[in-house]
Amino acid sequence: MRLLSTFLIGVSSGSIYSLMALALVLVWRSTRVVNFAQAGQAIASTYLGYLVITHTNNYWLALPVAMVAGAVIGALADIALIRPLNRRIKSGPVLEIAPVIATLGLLGLIRSLVGMIWGGDLKQYRAPVSINGFTFGHTTIPFSRFNLLIVFTAIVVMVIFAFVFQRTGLGLALRAAAFQPEIARLAGVRVDLVRTIGWAIAGATGAIAGVLVTPSTSLSPNSLDLLLVLGFVSAVIGGLESLIGAVIGGLILGIGLALILEYVSTSLAFPAAFVVLILILIVKPAGLFGMKRGRDA
Amino acid sequence: MRKSRIKLALELIAIAIALFFLGNSVSDFRVYEGATVALYVIAICSIILLTGYSGQISLGHGALMAVGAYAAVLARYYWHTSGLLSLIIAVLAAALFGLFLGWAAARLRGPYLAGTTLALAVGLPSLANQFHFLGGEQGLNFDIGAPPKFLGSNFSTTKWYFWICSLAALIIFWLVYNLLHSRFGRQWQAMRSAPVSAAISGINIARSKVLAFTISSGVAGLAGALLVMTLNLVTPSAFPLSLSFAIVTGAVLAGITRLGGAVVGALIIVAIPDIADQIAIKAGGVERVSANLPGFITSLLLILTILFAPNGANIGKFMSLRKKKTS
Image (cartoon, rainbow over all chains, first blue to last red; front, side, top):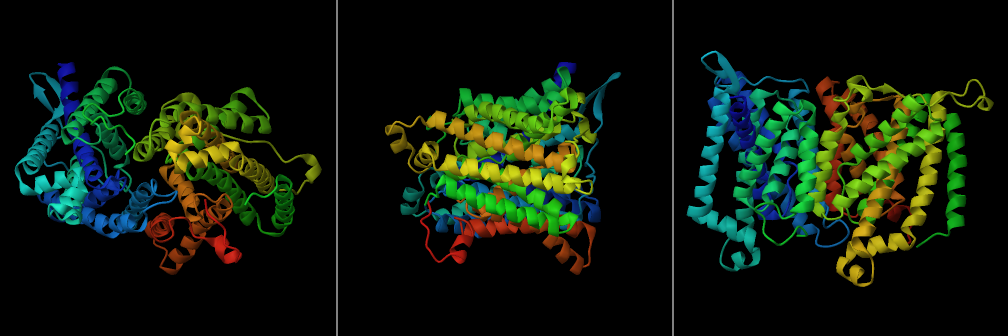
């Protein structure tokens, strides 16, 4: 029972990591940028969702509002920052680090703006359903209705992802623009627009992750930093290229961390995640689902 | 253009003498800020060596500073080492940690390295909360000892810290300058701009990268130890993510390949909170605004620099008309 419950908790937190990893992978595929600002974009969206909750007391309204906000912020980030950056910097010692620096700057910018508007104190996000664990007979397990909701929402998002990418023209354009931008452009795909759409979808996905994770913790301008790191680790486990890899990477990390937290020690969760990251990068740098191309690109 | 070792040394001695008189003529608070500038110069030098020359990025140098700081404090706390020995232990411990990290890092490029070091910056300082002997959230006291008697009884501790930090900064600057203009510096530059050609020319890329990471980490460790010396205390909260970002920002602002820019970068990083305070007071002094204004200005500067002056705000160009070739 304890094992099953731990496993379920792992699936629940793992699906949030998966969502964050999906957001990172999507941006990486479309623009070759690991978007460190994703935590910032998600936190801004989550605060907007908080605004909705405090005014209407309705979590279900907060989720779409945060998603739309996340999409808009994501699209803006691409148009206002990444496009000019790619136009301006074509060579030189900063070529490789420029996107990292730019998204880092954006992360700081959004975080400080959020802090200026809402202050640095911890805010509580009310969950829409009970966060008390299910009870079977006399035993109560930590897995709650809200955890179930998280898993369910994540599955819905992933099904939509799979449908869009495999069955629609937009999905084909997204894949083509990521795989061979020059040829896609020749074939009539508006690569810049498609990339911006990729950023928007990623922004919305990150926003969902933010809104889902926050009721279990609390909200502050840097409360999603850890989620960004865990999302990155998940994405690396999956190979940083593959959407399905991101999902599975998130689940592996979630379940693994849950087991360590439950059976080993609560203080070892972060070092464990870091060791996993280093090990994956050393032993299997292309990730479990990555292409063989290696990590130089 | 490489300055001769002697000429640079003489220039640095001149700066030291100027700093000596400066330290005596300004208020205690400015002296304290001077010490902070000096230790930021050291930290930024470590980033310039690593990123500007060897081409590896680190968003986790704040964590390496923490390693150095905790090593120095623990050595002094449990073994009662002298101040100087504590600082040396800080350098060695951080370098050792960097050696291990660099071994993994040498296989990574760009975003992978950035992500891994970011993970380190987010997670490592908070580890101190988990282990009792590291002092937890309250931290451990770090007292490097009173200034030597011969400096007089009214010689303030702040000024003593300023002297130590400045001297350390000048020495590190001299060492790093010479290192960057040595065989190793040239190897790093070759490796960064043309890795394949460099490898064909017989440069061992992996070893070169690990070496750069190790040295850079050691230098960062010294900066960390000096930081907690000025604070008199080591706590996890002395090494937030924003510290890692700040030193990268300082390095980028003044040009990632310009060692001399480290001073400009450090001055800007230390001046920003002051300037932000002035603006915040004029804007009505709301606490949440004034608390976040420094971060806002720093981030904005970082974005503007990378967009409009990616090789750094070329301050040297304004100061001398001579056009320098940037590497």
